[in-house]
Image 1: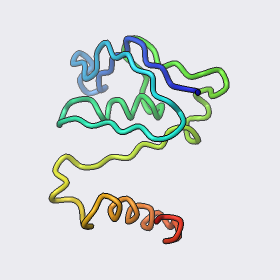
Image 2: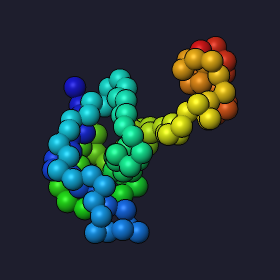
Image 3: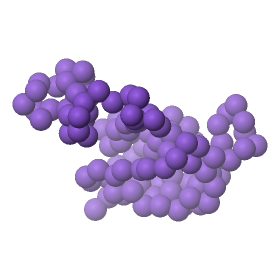
Length: 115
């Protein structure tokens, strides 16, 4: 199975280059299936998504792609989604399933496929 491998990765936003949001991150994320990242405000979820989608480069360490899936294939390999920190004020459905289907419907996916 192919995976993205982060080795000793660090990340700082350009607006605060001396304040690392991620530091010493070592993880292997499979390119097949789904990976869920959970954490509190400021724990680095968005920073990780920015690294994985190629929006930013690590301040240190590396993000390694398998030879059969180079970084040029980012759009086909990584699709990141964000759920707001206080979901009780953001969600409109009654279940996670309804929320996920709603997001797909807003993107124009036909209802049977979204379901």
